[in-house]
Image 1 (cartoon, rainbow, N blue to C red):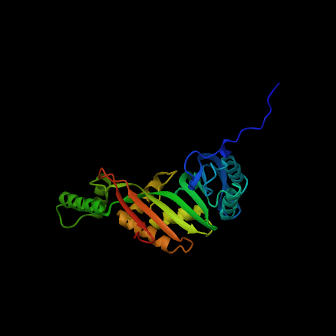
Image 2 (image 1 turned 180 degrees about the horizontal axis):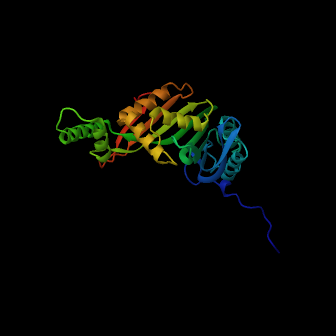
Image 3 (image 1 turned 90 degrees about the vertical axis):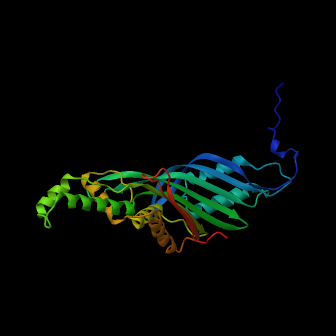
Length: 301
């Protein structure tokens, strides 16, 4: 005779330790395809890693219903991952717990792949940008957060000035007369590399608090940050693009403080951002350490 009893539910057994509510209980690192709006009526499906949590407010309850959260998360594969879509998911997460939870939180980390035209040659490459979208429902209040990383190039103003001085000294040594034939000077300059200023790949890490405002379209935000800094890293390049990149770096010599102020000016003009934190990191090629700036909208008390 085969036993055909119901499946055991250990989560309903008696709590053996103290009865306390818990702030967040859930799952991390769940693979999830999500739809990201890149423009009006345009979406990109990305492979995300998701963290989902609910509060365990009923101190007498042993645990939450995790499989219900997983099933609700899967709905983002067929709906837009925007403010409305995330809001519905957060509310369903709370409701799925049958009264034992009052809050929910979701974190979605992914790489956004964007086409990027070359500076002059009309070629196109692709670049990925690390993104994290967070949504939280607590005490009936929705809050959204956007985190992103944007690389760029930075050339040291001090090093550029020192390089120019060495070039001037070399010209002075090479030409003893008070006047120099223009073509002779141009030929000499083309043949001699006296010094180059140090430059490096740099990064801006941004954490933007949106409150209950809608999520922005990501491509215009990313390209706006790159434009504000002035020296975005490139993908597909030919010699004309590399030369233009060198010109852009010369036109935008910057310490980390300069880059930070450019970013801050852009953020301060963005009314949809309620609060922000950002870090600028210049991974120095001269030094064995990095130069950084950390700033936020409201100074920490």
